[in-house]
Figure 1 (cartoon, rainbow, N blue to C red):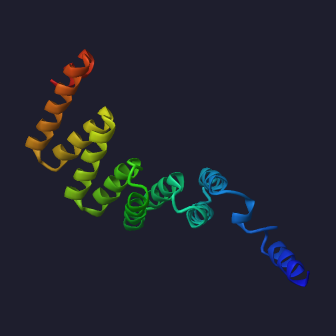
Figure 2 (cartoon, helix red, strand yellow):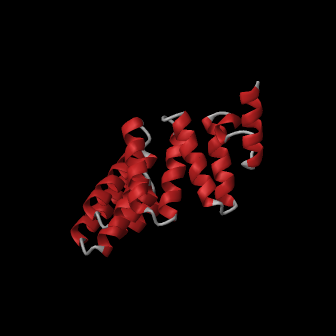
Figure 3 (spheres, rainbow, N blue to C red):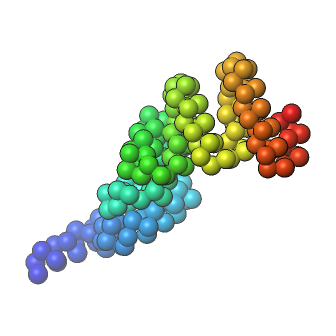
Length: 170
């Protein structure tokens, strides 16, 4: 009983009636993290995402949120690590490929970034991602690679009968 009283006083003095993980599942912690992000309370958001992953190391939403926030805060190396860990724990979390690609691009690891973004585009058939990859190649002066992406988009458009995309890629 004394221990319970001690913790009740401790958490009351700490500004919280209970630790964050006591409020529910990892989904709840992710929801809280997003709310803290919206309020620009980034340190609290980072803590909630981390708490969510401690509670459930297979929480895709927590990995994606934590990685995106780290990248937004300019912590590219940490973001890359979060996304890599996500892919180790959840190989089907393909959104982590796109996040890791952006982190790697900021870090200057262009070939790895290009490979991740290309893998993501292939797995999702995401036209905006293919456009982004073509832009990256163009910015790097890799015009042959850029042209190959546009040709692949043209083939994709023709196979789908998408005349608007075909005109853009042509």
